[in-house]
Image 1: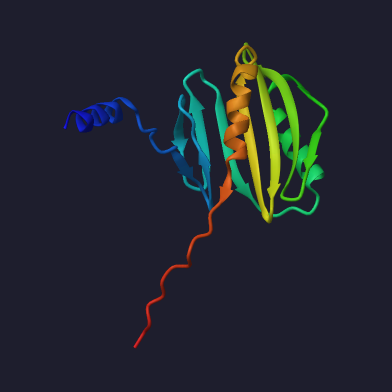
Image 2: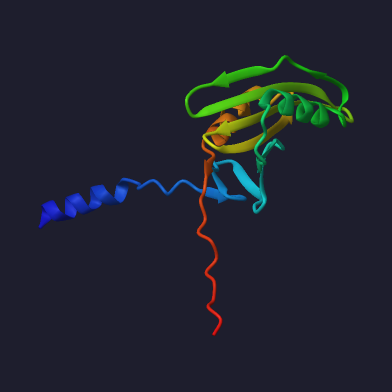
Length: 166
């Protein structure tokens, strides 16, 4: 009996990890780590960090020329920033993933901001990520933002049930 109580006490002290929170967007889902909260889910997912950083995840239409699309979008994102500079593109490609990313620096009023823009092709799905943070916290939160981006999974939804008319 004492052995059973001892085992029970040990099991109570061991914390079972809670399931990893996932957020669904338009036919995709991402994992949201602690410290981030969901500001919008639905067609796109917008996550906010307690520090003021943000991450936008969106599924996009298929594109034939990923580098050209990424450059156009990065330049579009850069436009509202003051004194904006865009870095050289970085590329990655393997059997399942291909991505192009740009790092953008600029100002929003008096705040120095850094943005990481990435467009990803994973198998036959295409996704866009926009991570923005203050200059001082960008490097600290970049790893978490990249983990969220790498966790994206396409979700196949069953078609709606059709009613038979009689």
